[in-house]
Image (tube, rainbow, N blue to C red; front, side, top):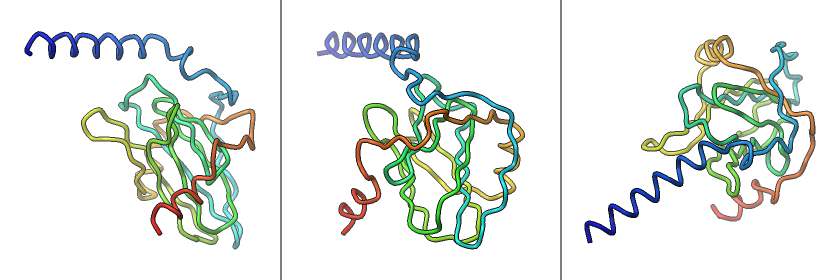
Length: 170
């Protein structure tokens, strides 16, 4: 039994090493992700919400995280990066998608005229989740992180995650 566990562990370590060594093959650049200089967006209007999403520099780096708003890919985060997007105020299911599955989500409630700051947490022992953060913490992350944007905007996700989570939590 001990030999079986040892072989399983060795195979698992080899798989993790292979995944880390081949990120371009696995993640691709299907959304035309690029690092660009950060320019602060205009303040949200009275019927809009501005959403920032951050990913820490010390998080597991071998996979990109596609950020989906309900059913549309709005950003892709690499290690130590962030992005933002403006949405009409309302319910928004923000999903962190690591191919081939949605791995984390957070429901943004109607916040007209406000800015919401979210951080993706990725850790082998801590788990995967999205948490809201304070503006002061967001400002520190903005100065310490890379800003990314996608060139192929408006691409639909495989499903409408807001409808999915609405149905799941009935």
